[in-house]
Image (cartoon, rainbow, N blue to C red; front, side):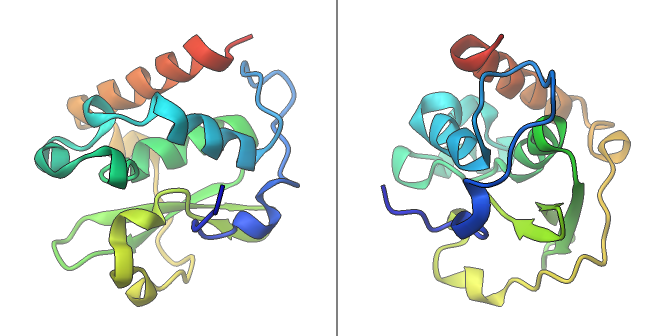
Length: 148
């Protein structure tokens, strides 16, 4: 498989926290599982669901994926402010940046600036009930294929 997400080069070295609750070997392993059917239209942000497809599985998955990554691997979640005022979320683990959902931007990904200036908090993101429910669905789907 050809990887295109930010940080894929070292993602195989990122190991899960003890007792994370998932049978995941590395961040690269998590990406493979998510891309192999866990990401789906139902986990995509509602405003983007009509554009979601198997060719763009990461579309609308950033915040729920970033917080799931934090659950499993620790680290921090940061955001890049987008023109529409929303934040695109990514992770920083062990000083390295990882963005498992960067592929949704296609050629626009070169315009993203990863400056670690905008910490993202789940309490803020999950005030939106639909987002929290999508996060719970993503966790449940992952537990179904890789739960302990």
